[in-house]
Amino acid sequence: MQKMKVIFLASGNQKIESIAPFVQVQMDSLAEQGVEISLYRVVGRGIKGYVTNTIRLRKILKREQPDIVHAHYSICGYLASIANLGLKSSVVVSLMGSDMVVKLPLIRFLAKKIWDMTIVKSREMYDRLNVAKARIIPNGVNIDKMCLLDRDDSRKKCGFEDTKQYVIWCSQIDREEKNYPLAQKAVDLLSDKNVVLLPIQDAPHHMMNVYMRAADVLLLTSKREGSPNVIKEAMACNLPIVSTNVGDVEWLLDHVEGAYITQGDTPQNVCECLKKALTFMGNSTGRQRLIDIGLTTRSIASDIINIYTDICRTK
Image 1: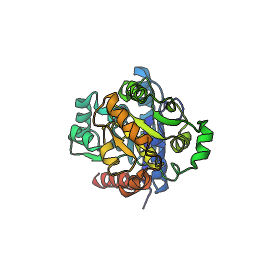
Image 2: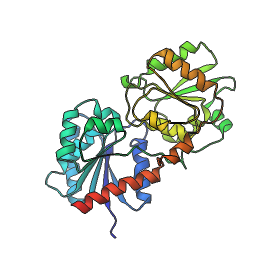
Image 3: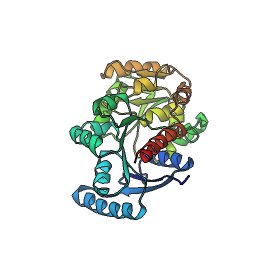
Image 4: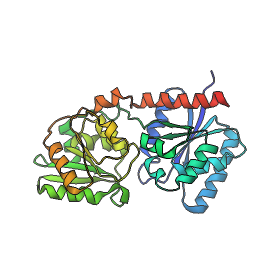
């Protein structure tokens, strides 16, 4: 059987990595299972960047004639839709939690009429989109790369003090939906000078494994999410977790020892969960939960390949 030919479409405007780490992980896992895959990085912003990328991508699609164009985030889905007009490639679009906040009517129209399949990350997103051609496939985690590094070595690499406990918070502090002020207020309520809130911004992805083995707790305070990758990466590292109840977090962390979901989004609620997590003093059971629910990269890659295959058979 001839290899399936897929072009991944993703933003190339990252500060550190060339593309979002979860996109690279997904590409690698598909390639390992025999998909012929290449990447188109959308570099540039605004109308000029959009037009330039549309023209450039259309030339590539005409030349390469891939079976599938797989776009990540709605903006890349719009680009793929226009560039592929009149051509034979099928369009698959992966949406994230932030996509569902704005322009939902446009996304729903494209998902019904233009895109061959839309992948969403949680049941909440699926219900909100409410189209037949949609599937729930969360991003997976490469548990070989997000592994159980030695804790003492990891703390030394991060420069952590032995007498302090570190709560890591992983995002850009200026992103309103990530709600860093809530994290600050909750940690302040602990009134413990030996607990350090450490925002991890713009770190190379390979360092996330080190931070998650060195830290005492991962804190997520988002107002909205789809299926947060940072939660799954912390699970792979058996790091205790405190999270607001967003996206599919409740399902991900079901029966995970050392994981605590807040009952409200107030500093007091988050602080109470932090107290429990900081006194847990050990490995969580998140890694085994990931394996049990099939969120390793290999399992997710198989699910995506099944979608590609079904689309190609139908056409």
